[in-house]
Length: 213
Figure 1 (cartoon, rainbow, N blue to C red):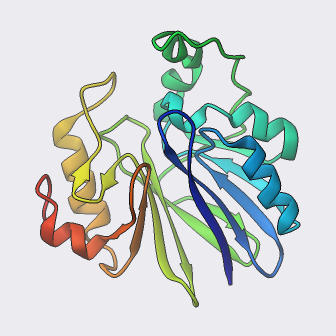
Figure 2 (figure 1 turned 90 degrees about the vertical axis):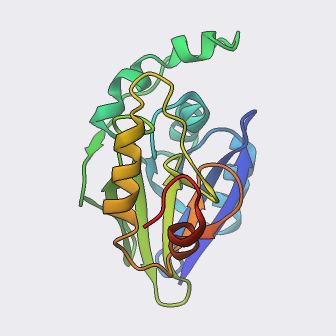
């Protein structure tokens, strides 16, 4: 059984998730863009041990509270190396909005396509889906009770895809990533995007106006 709590976090309402193995209580925090108090409450409520802090990409709204979560709960900070320039440029990203931030904590594990991130008796598969950013990834986990879940970051939304007009974005690449690395998977998979409501791979393959199977 998986424990999953997903909630909008921060000024940009990034979907942050606390995901844990119900048997071992080992957890990952996905895209901590805010709501550090809520994360702390969930960790305490379920008596969790945070093993990893994982990121679908390194835009400001998905890494904003990584330092705070790391300092409060530990966990290995994970990111794809393609987004190192964005992670290292955190202060510059924040300055665009007039925000002052502390320096990022070091990335402790550079993840790549087909890597596995252990979650107690479960594991998350890393799917490299460049396009929104060079290092954008999705995370897929299979749970006998919940089925397949895909944490898609800003690659795929309900009836939308991630913007590609920011540094490192590539409009052709994001379509290729979705068609070749997402729509070729189990279409019953539930998609938890980086923002907005959940959907499924099948629904998006049939009805997403920006990219169809």
